[in-house]
Structures are given as C-alpha cells and as structure tokens.
Image (cartoon, rainbow, N blue to C red; front, top):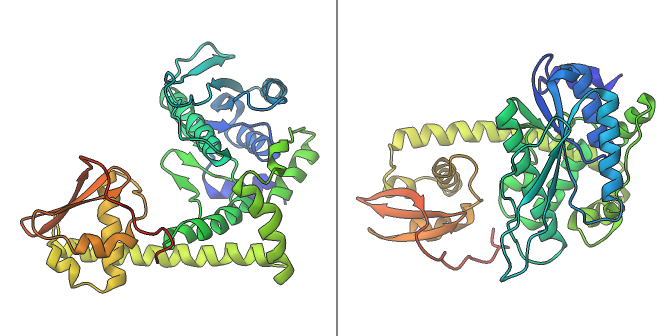
Length: 346
C-alpha cells in the first residue's frame, strides 16, 4: 500500500491545508515532504531547514534540501542558529535566509550546558522556535517526520530516564500546532518510499555515534530486545496504544474528581483521594497552571500534600505549589527551587 493511503486517513495532512515541514534532508523528512506535497498541494507546503554548522556535511545537506524543494515546488526557509555560548559570553541568535525573501529570526541561543545531549536539546529548541515563528506568520501546522521507529526509541529512553506513566505514552500525533503524520510508519518504510519515488536523502553520520543516548537505544538496546522477541518493537507500539486508551479514561476520571472538589480544590479533599488519583490530580492542576504540559511532578505528591497553611514548594518547571485558605494553588516560582528528590524515586 502506498504510504499516502496510510497517512491521509490520519487527517494530520489535508488537501489545501497549510503545513510547514521540518526538513533535515534525512529519509524520514524527505518522505514527509513528498507526502505533504501530494496531499496538501505544493502551494500550501513550506519547509524549514536548520543548518547548525556542526558537521562537515552541513552545507551539503542544505544544498540538498534546496534542490529537493525546488524540484517539488516548495518554499524553503533556512535558519542557521548560532551555537550556544559558554558561560560569560553574549546571547546567541539565528541568521535567517529564505528563498521567498528574508524572514525575521527570534533569538534562540539558550545555552543549556555542555555535552552531546545538551547540544541536541539546544538544536531542537532552535528548530522549533524558528518553526513556530514561521508558522505563526503563514498559518497552518508544523509537521515533524517522527516515525514508529522513533516512537519506540522514545518510549524506551523515557522509561529509563523519566519516572511516571507519561514516559510510557510516547509522542502524540498532534500536540498543538505540531503534527506527526508518520507515527504509524517505520523508518524502513520511509526509506522504501523515497527509493520508489526516486528521492535521494542525506545520511547523518551522527546517527551512529554512541555519544547520543538515542543512538545507544537504537544500536544497543533494541537489538537486545529483538533477541528476546522478534516482535519487540511492535509489542511496544501495541502496548502504547493500550496505555493511551486507558490514559484517556484516567484523565476523564481526574477531571470529574477535580470538578467535584472545586476550583481551587481544598487540600483536605485532595488528601482524601486514593494515592494514585491524588498524584494524577496534582499533575492535572500543574498542567493547567502551566497552560499545557508541566514537567512530571507526581513523585513530589508527598511533599506537596505535607504543606501546611501558608506553605509553598517550588516543584520545577517554573511552578510553585501554595496552600492558602486550605486550598491548593499553583503559580509561578518566585525563588530558587527546593531540592529535587531522587529522580529514581517511584
């Protein structure tokens, strides 16, 4: 079956609907761009390529993306984010170029420390900041080429690195403006699609280095799991589907309980809930205060529910839990965060 027949029913790409594709030049993003053009129409599709200048092949990748977009009739935006500076340096920004004219760039250089994973985080932040800027100007969604293979790797990595059930829910097909139309497609299938369509892609040598945690999952952990069971990856994805269905039921229950408790909910009422429901309610309140998804704080429930009248606790993510008039509220942090408990704590 042609991938277009599998992606179209998701509704994440639509005829005549504007979309900005995050284009690295790799097989997944090349496949996504081709599908977006075929579904939405080239006039409604634009692409964003970020040239971080971190690899010898970076400029060649940019030229490849430019040639591909010209072939497909797609407007290409290029950003060249400056690397985060070391302590004591000046803030970094981005240098924009566009085949459709220059676009203003938002500062995105947010130094996040040393190390390969911090560098990846900076690159991701810079890419999404630029994408949001462009999408707000032209309208429409932002499409990322995350595949089912990426989904499995994400779940396994989060399972090891992040406590809480959110680690097992993976990436959502839609998260605000961001859509992931290829979550039902494997990395091997995107490569086969590109080959069948005569679309070349760039290979990133960085995908093989063990310096990145994601690569260690891909090259070490997954083969070990396949040796235990040949359907290991599909079993992870099937479990993910079940957990998402069950999470929807849990979320409805939490909303019902919080509606009964009142706004803001009395701390005594929250304390009387079953421990699991109490943790979920706490997370939902933090999410609401953050206007989206707050960092996972369920493991800090004992500290929050131990607060006395007038007490406060910084729980991370710029949020502060406070008790006033017997009710629990979340607001913005106003000082240094309290020491965080052991991240391995359940």
